[in-house]
Length: 133
Image (tube, rainbow, N blue to C red; front, side, top):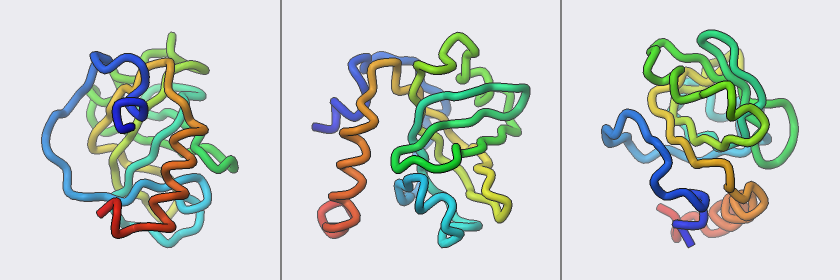
């Protein structure tokens, strides 16, 4: 099951292999609710745009895209402009009060990632949090 969440390309490039603390996975509703402001979260989505030190991701659950900001050039380099519209990424970072995500780690999930299945997994994880702790 979890392999399918990584997409069909398990060898997709990855950056910053440091271990991150446990963080909640959030969808668009959670992201924009304000309940996670100032906290580290995981956001997964399809790359919509890249410009300088910023990117936008379309998240599960619809709504406005996640605005991702990078302070580290190696993180920004993960978001290749050729992947706009097809690349999927998981970004771990701190959700700021202005609804921007300050990236700390980026994982390239490839171009064949099932956002529908990911959204279902998020739904199940919210209903049964003890199984995903």
